[in-house]
Image 1 (cartoon, rainbow, N blue to C red):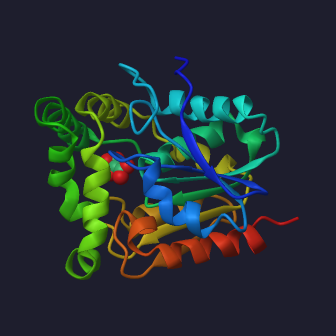
Image 2 (tube, rainbow, N blue to C red):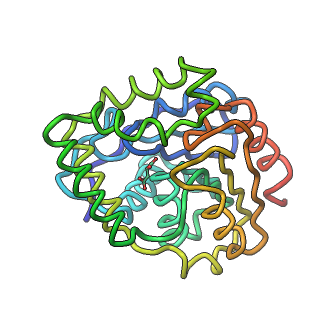
Length: 261
Ligand code: MLT
């Protein structure tokens, strides 16, 4: 299904670095990267359907979102190959993009995400989350996942980061979150495509990530040829917000040395 055009924010010049946000947030979660990486890349942060400024879609899939990112590049005349990064849900979109638009990729950054599809238990959990989104709104959804979405260190020592993430979630319409839950629940298993990824890949994972733990990152690293795995200390699932300096330093190094010539 073709989605309405995605809204985005960008900063900087040079090689396009597209960053796709997590659930149930929006492009503003990339503020530390828009600010911190604009000297080395053209950082482009889209909003997925119904989040931030992007128009809602009653139903959409992760593959639709990957195509919408490709469409965003077309609309802005970005023909050169991009580095595509995604965190969690954004990582699912990045993996779908790698499968569907491989020729547009210069590199891939998979942060706090996994390749596997949801199992039966996770799918049942999605249905409950969807009900919470529709009946109580996105703030309630985030409240329910907060203890897992942010690492122990962040929750005990960086309350302002917890507040930032919760404030972003609070702005998202419940119906948009409900639609995204279905996209998450019904996404396909990206594992079979990992061996075919032929671009340099950086895998990042917070050492305290309780949603997509190191084991999920390691599985991707084992299967994607030449992938580099970096664990970010004292970061949980939302590692780009929790330890932005370490996150940005890894991305910077990847852009400078990891992409080849
Ligand atoms: C996210 O952070 O995007 C979500 O935790 C992803 C998921 O629930 O699978």
